[in-house]
Length: 428
Image (cartoon, rainbow, N blue to C red):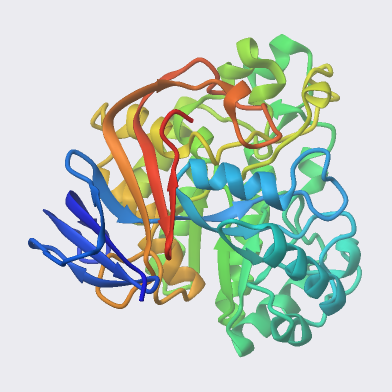
């Protein structure tokens, strides 16, 4: 019997929204006891005084780049990055090469994940075959092969009939559809947010309407079918307003927001260049404020990183040519704790819930994201007073494309427990 005792930490339970000082006992990979003083002979004990203990983070939106793009990231390097950021469960997107659109490709990738991953990885399938937008995948066969849900992330399903069929199947079977909302006819050729910054740089902009038009369509389709719609990387004020009203009408919709959309505006591209180029693009300050308010009032359920590694060579290309995407697994919590919690813009419990219990509920992970007896023994220990400077050269990820390089942050993960494995990540 494997036993591990964490002594004297600040225990935060996002499910009950409670916190207390106490001990936590993990036995055979599950939480056995929470709170109070626990004394056991001959048990491995870790002094957690001065640290906060909470469930391991869950990221619903990452790109691990395998198969096909292992030069950008691998399951091994991506999950190592996750561990350093306090994440114990990831949901990997399906826009790989080849795309994950069949039970065969899914099973092969899951074998790779089982071999190389050091955290839990759930794998999405695509919505359409080859991501070509011409014919839907066999949803039932993909679920049987282990798909965690379906997403065409990187672009939208532009064919409304196919999206209607996908959401109808979602309503019947109960699977999740993660929706990248982008009308390609309104975003084609764009590199940054449409507006003054795009004009100043001489670039074509991406209108807020590109996101909002598809979101409006898919909310209507979800209402019609009862499908489970999860809106990825929300970036505009109007999108927040539409999701809020949809929830009030009882539409089965959840939503996520990224750390970069919560903390940066379109002006960042002027000094960060392609390391501030992502899709959807960084928007205006009023959009950032609406996203934070949406997180506070529950319109936004989840914070997800949209971790999207690229090589330094790719990101050194001219802004128009450089690929979209930034990394975020190793910087997520410290950046948000520093920029939102310490500045009084977001409650610590709301931040933790958006990274733990909320994604666990959406994904149906009944034993994750919780700090209670019987839950999985997946714990992150954080030093809220610990400071570090974000140095991309120290990342475990192959990617260096972060907009937060050089930033001084607090709220540093120092240790991650996954079952009977202890990962000390101090001095990372």
